[in-house]
Length: 261
Image (cartoon, rainbow, N blue to C red; front, side, top):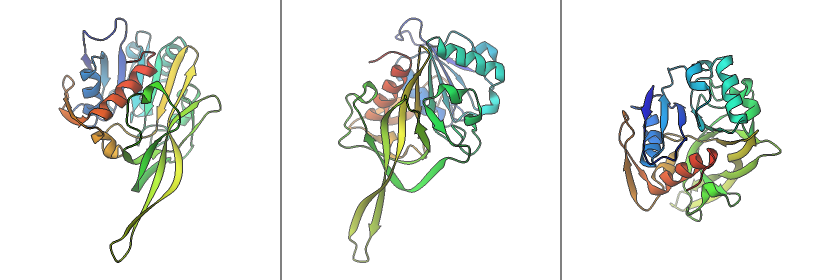
């Protein structure tokens, strides 16, 4: 387990971030954004089980991102569910081991009741050979101050369906790009799928982001911005990302834990 303490974080807030392989791999992206934003977090690599000392009370937010479901015991699940019911947040980020994925199978876990989306009971991955563009569905604090008139595109996601009482914030619209023999390029649009859905469970906020925080699914979202931002979480590789990317994930995390910029 890796712990990052930031004195700028509001008192009484702490995040448990689990998954995305390791801090020398994909997890360096979200770890860098969290650290740069002054947020306290404990990090668990994908090969580390949560365990009862981490699943219990004390966290303001649980982030599960491409994390093996078998790392969480029935008792751990029960404590996480109780914590969210009592006011903690839960954010799931997409990946091959998120939702159902290739090997996630969270649809069979207690988090299926907590998350604001219905999950498939089979492989839900969309690995797109052509991009999907992000589209704002409604105004929301998570999306504030970002240029949705010039949105980024992504390369993949998990198929999810909002529950009846949930709110769809972002969708992903397929772009169909064709090239004629004379070099003329045309762009059409295809299907639209839910990408970011929010809800509540008891007193806690919940959010489901269907795409990834790191390459490859994240696509050009990782470079979205008019400035470059360099950041490095403790023990992690350094990242350089777009400032809009960093703001989006910061606002997503802070909203789900019940706080805003």
